[in-house]
Image (tube, helix red, strand yellow):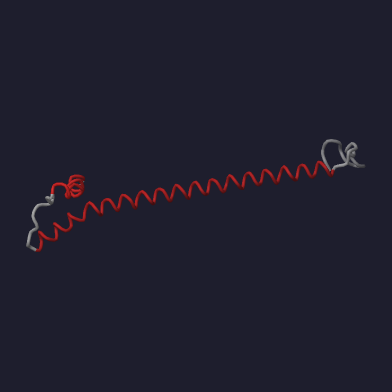
Length: 107
C-alpha cells in the first residue's frame, strides 16, 4: 500500500505508473482499477477513523466540561444558601431544648 501511494504521489516527477502499463483484458483491468483506488480508499478510511476519534474525544470533553460547570453551579448555590441562612439567623443564642426534649438530640 505504502509503495503504491508513494509511487502515485511521485508519478508527476517520474512519469511512470507504479502498476505498470494498462492491460486490455477485463479481469486485469478490474484488478488494476481496484489497486489504483486502494491507496485512496485506505487514506479515506484512515481520515474517517481519525475524525471519529476526534469527535468522540470532543464529546467526552464537552460532557466533562458540562459536569464541571454543573458542579461549580451547585457549589455556588449551596454557598449562597448558607450565606442567606446565616444572615437570616437571629444574632442571639440559639434556643435550648423545649419541654420534653432531650438536649443534643435535636427536635
